[in-house]
Image (cartoon, rainbow, N blue to C red; front, side, top):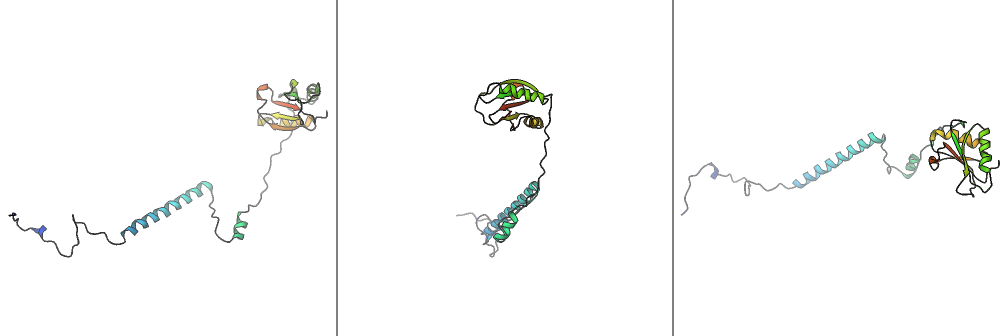
Length: 186
């Protein structure tokens, strides 16, 4: 026979309690929607914080897609504004060295161009033939952006010459290199 214990306060459980197992009641209906609501609220807050953070970084917020297509077209077309472009004045700087390369088949053209540049006030360095002898244009190359005005000055001394920034001739020891093409009429 089973031993009988004296009754105590834990033996009396009210009938209206719906506890199951280790004092667990069944989950109330609709409780899953609470988790969905919290997730939606967290998503909205995170998206809002992200948009606010991007507006601080970019300085503006733009929502495309709202309104009619006519208003969208009108709002997305930027109005052109005039941007001032700096004017570079051609200069002659006798402190810079100018190398001259003949890019044509005409004999002695590098020397002729070197004489023209010396008369214009330039310090002429090396005179030589270029690797190619079929170049069409005369181009003044400069490596340092600070020498752009001087390159314009050299090009002004040679009718038909254009300038171009390039580091292709940086190992020659000259600040500016002129490659004479067939369009040189001097």
